[in-house]
Image (cartoon, rainbow, N blue to C red; front, top):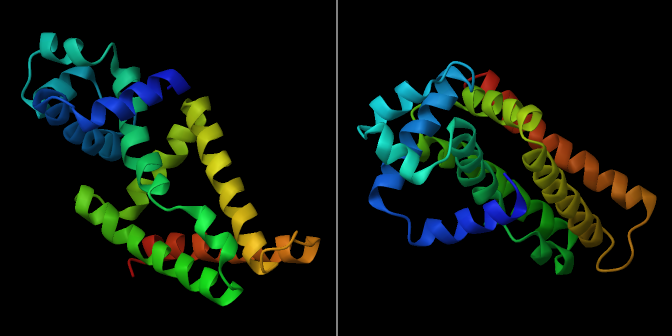
Length: 186
């Protein structure tokens, strides 16, 4: 999804039509369950209980809805966490804040779908390979998170290589824990 399309989608989310919303959630579930290639437009239309005409009124194609679903259910939740707040925190507070955020992710996924975290990860990695804009957005989000956490570790000063490395290790640990939690059904 292009930056302009993403901004438009974000604006539409606030005043999105009931039909558009009725299409998005089942589409997310189908993409989670079957992947992009395994999800047909007919499946989306059937699961959404709308006509093809109604679908095309809101989305140009399967690729279009896939991009919006990915933005809504992957980028959107990450944007709710303001990484800039980390900069002025003590290292301990920044770690605690991030741990709390990471602990909420499985519950967030559980509130949006009956699929488990492994499906969520599968779709995320599929989207990274299919959608260059998504890959760029996710990379940008993680780079900013790393930068802000490094700044916290440096207590608001310019971070050293060591502090940057510690921040990266901490993020890797958090990501690894959520991944292991999904794989081990914790």
